[in-house]
Image 1: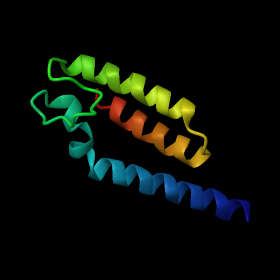
Image 2 (image 1 turned 90 degrees about the horizontal axis):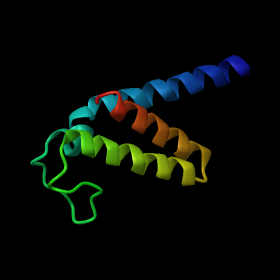
Image 3 (image 1 turned 180 degrees about the vertical axis):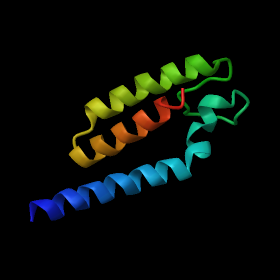
Image 4 (image 1 turned 90 degrees about the vertical axis):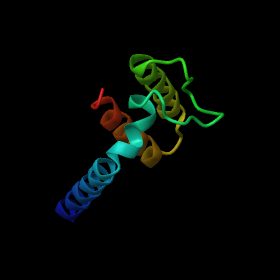
Length: 88
């Protein structure tokens, strides 16, 4: 039973990593492309350089992770944040 749970967790972790990798370009575009079209409610501004955008992303994700009430949401946000910041 414990082995099944561990295998299931590993499969979920692998699936999440695969999803992040397959969407890498989409996920990092607003951080890497300073000419990317930004939504009006974006945490980035047109005058930010790449380093400033990663800093804003890091700060925003730290807030979101710390305020997440659901453990699964926290886990997904952590995985997303770690993946994005590994591209820095």
